[in-house]
Image 1 (tube, rainbow, N blue to C red):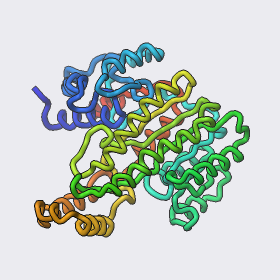
Image 2: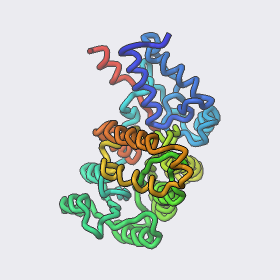
Image 3: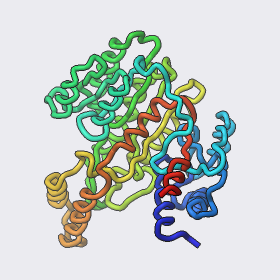
Length: 381
């Protein structure tokens, strides 16, 4: 019997943890999805707090491979990497995750990290947080030359460990210039650069028949091809340091959603690109990770009511007459209203996402997650 009430909420958080961290096979409907779903419900009952197989706790930096072949990915992970030490009894996955292998790479102060999309939102917060932890941070900003508010605040820190750089990830010449700026700023370029965080991205909405081909191409140019271009440009420096690449994906890179096809396509692409790259970089000692946030749209600057309405008006005006006639304005307006409501939902606390990025950049070992802390608090409560 499935748990109810508090146990059901606990199970939902556990499933979210699986989803957030990108466990291969956690996608509903995948070959391993049923197994993981059953495990979630079982673990959330009072009977389930026991030792959990080690492979259920391995997180994505150690599990390359296509998600439909989750069992093969686990086997491949076992062959390629050292088996993690069991965490003992009472240690399934932790929502909001704390890593079991908590040793951090030292010294942090010598590690240079480039973050894209730092004008606002996730990238802005991550740049400040990495700086506070002692990293040398290069913050790529689209609006650097225009003097954006985010740029002014980052520059206002007046630190020699945080430097804002004009960067449009779609423009090859700007990317090449940033590579040279970073290389010339490193204490020893031959030792490379520690980390690249591909965060820059854009989003839109609209059902397939409402979305123009230009919109599909625009979103892909930033979210997917921008990620590929930045990664290729900085891989020589990352390889020399045996460093880290962290790509921003989304829960919509694992689970398609109506009216979000341009965004979903690009995030599925980022997942596939990261999986392929992880295979290729493993022998070279470079770790490739993906962070998959849920709904944090209220905490970012992707949408506001005015922008949503402007997009909607332009979309309607450009629709073919046959599409407008078949769907009607009422149906269209209902979809826009849903998008307005969605943009006012979700978490405004992005600290879990920033924490995941920092873990990806600084964790010395394979990522594990444990429920020990949560279970102890739950029992005390």
